[in-house]
Length: 199
Length: 199
DNA sequence: CATGTCAATTGACACGGTGTCAAGTGAAAG
DNA sequence: CTTTCACTTGACACCGTGTCAATTGACATG
Image 1 (spheres, each protein chain N blue to C red):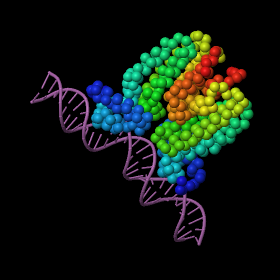
Image 2 (spheres, chains in turn cyan, blue, orange, purple):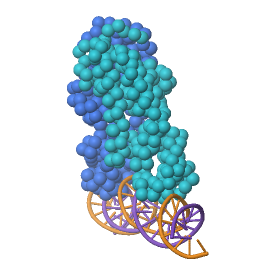
Image 3 (cartoon, chains in turn blue, yellow, red, brown):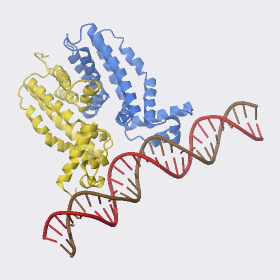
Image 4 (cartoon, chains in turn purple, blue, brown, green):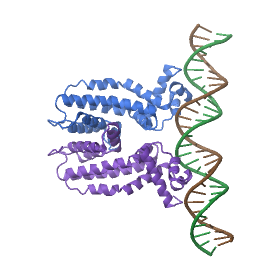
């Protein structure tokens, strides 16, 4: 915060990212991060006041590097409802594994830590907006299931696309990333859309 | 473990249950449980070696009291595929809110604690067996979606019925319990079953 | 060259929560 | 009257986070 060597800051963020990715978000301590970044533990606190703020910063850092905003925005360009649903599922569903480590760490702090909770919810609201947009697109070209309220459709798509579900389907159920995407697409299409069924 | 006054043991389990339910599974310490049970903190350790073992024991205790096994078993009695899917979703989906506190606490320890992890997975495998049975029933009477492998159908139903999804739909999306059940049923039916579509 | 600034280091420490240990209390049972 | 057993009391170790104060070393400017 107060003191700032941007290079060191980046080193810390990279170290955090690397460790969280390697350990799947578990058991990464401030001292581990410091060691990985090649600095002292206290120096980390010179840049980030708390562990949760460091995790939040790392999330934003990753989002920037990976260009998630662009990727999600791009998926909105598809006009047709079905195509757009697929595009959005591709965009977000394929992003999850890239941020899984940090997401897990943040999720684990959610219950305890206010900052982590807010940051995560914020993140998820952004995804929800994408869901709303996709559902609206389907609704506009008449492909949304006839008796399904937009709010409920959004809830379903959003829930389907949660990080926890990605974990469950890939880790617990052993699905590959491709299978995961297929599973979500299939569920979303059949539940949310009417009309000519594909797949 | 070694020393055993079953009355005290029950007092501890009841206290744990009560506190976890009240606090939604968060911030319940061993000392809180002891105070609630009207005994010293160390006495708790006389009965349960670690916090996680206490939580696991509380889960089993609740399962017994609530008779979840019977309730799930009962849902298997429905013969027809569609009815059985609904019955199973009713049985498990309506059980979740009853155990939500303890489930959250256990889930939070899963990453850190071996015992909690094993106990939780065990619990979830039992649910998965119910899913398998429901999917098989649908498959046997030809109502399972034609191009959907049994394994994938099971993955979907099981994931749909996760505690995390219940949390997301009721807490984050603000759905009532009845709406939650309806949402899951609808998604399951449309995704997993073919043939005459209902709702 | 001297001085000040600033990032980072070192090492000590407080706190909260879990789990351990040892000695002691009090009541019931032989 | 002693043994046994459940429980109490209080101290303590451990771990990880976060804080504090004194110090080092580099670089910049007068």
